[in-house]
Length: 341
Image (cartoon, helix red, strand yellow):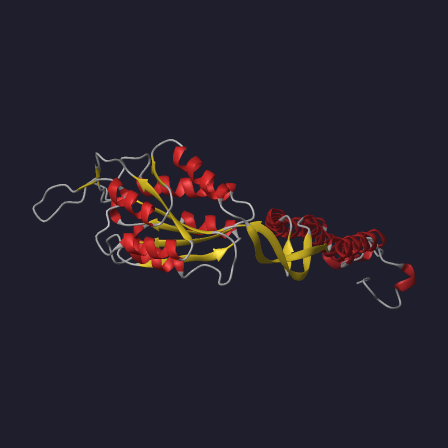
């Protein structure tokens, strides 16, 4: 596997076209000045030792050396092999509610955005564990299969929105069922499902699915997001309207703590209410710390070899060659006419 350790230096390649433009502009100005002094064939006879092509060759060598040096600065590396790495960790499937009610702003900046911020912090604190991500509303979908790649997990997390699930509702039971089937088969590490929702379950029997998870040895933790007082659901339009029912009344969505507590109790897990503090996150991390850790395997490219020595020798050779290519004709090579026209 090939990669650049410092790919940001590749942006320096954008300077090369500007350098070429300046070079050709300078050549054009030189020809204009020479034309003012006399005819080109006459002036060439007055400067018999000046080569027409060597300055261009020197410029090309310099640009080629500069190109190699940019790649050198970016540190090209080659992955020698794909290795199986064993670490001590647990497996966690996160089921995130993305129904429209999660857009309510009774928690800053909104229930959904607060959930994403909390999960991002959670991923920062997970070291050698595996994590997967499920989004659900009226249906549940695997957004990220269980993995140790927390960078990808964060990338997927940042793009989550209610539009990802076309069927609205809150099918917590479907999310728990899908999470149970998403763990690594025959893995001995403790497993947990973390459900983040406002608890407005209208679709299925989430309590029964949590009981089934507990029978399989999978703990179900629930984070209730929102406030019991509730809040309207923004329409995200320019007028700042809120969702209304069939009678034209503004819909108020409230945190259903009782539902969340029943699911957690059935799943032999923790229930905690999230607010504008980090209390829920700390409680969740404490629960993860109590879980039994075992060897978790993951495939990674290892033993990346630096490839810059070869590029360094090429750049040095080009620069040395440039030094020995003079602007004047080589008297020993006049008969060959190599670079001497």
